[in-house]
Image 1 (cartoon, rainbow, N blue to C red):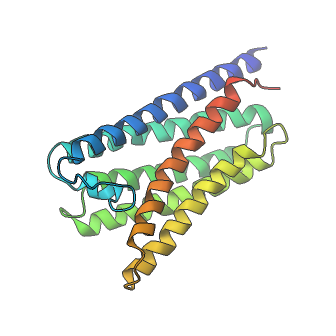
Image 2: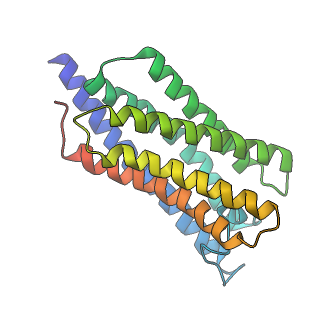
Image 3: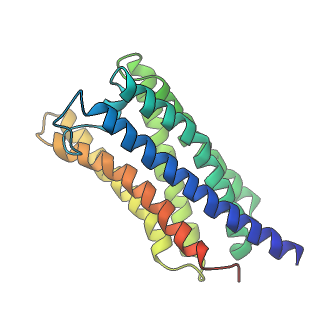
Length: 217
């Protein structure tokens, strides 16, 4: 009974953190875009990188960068609670849980580095942060997706949400690298950076909805 109650408490906390993280992420971007519009009235998700907003002095930078930094520890909490939820379905696996949390921390540190130090202020630190964030996120979501795929009680769309994040990150990387070679793919590169953000928000929505109506079996 105590174990079951612990699992239920973990599920409730996980759902709550999904909603808090989703709200923080969406509000940060929405308010940052609103603040950015006077600077660039032609804004669209095909001509403005998210990082462009964070590198724009004034309110766009203040809102976007501070919101992103505040959201970073929420990501770690979401993943930690996800590990607790998975225990109820697949049992405790200390090695796996430790590796997942380490990847989460790597991705979070990368987020903080690339956000706290805009490209215009410190290109080297900003690029290093992007690398940590990218590698951490791709490997983390691949591992999470694989773990969820093995849980028979989970619908297939849960792990597919993780794999979709990986797909978006890799497509963005391809177009970004092509852009560096001079290819005319800037609009596609920008769009897929936004898709990385939207897919992460979709992951939170999908997991909240599933665990809202499902208990530990």
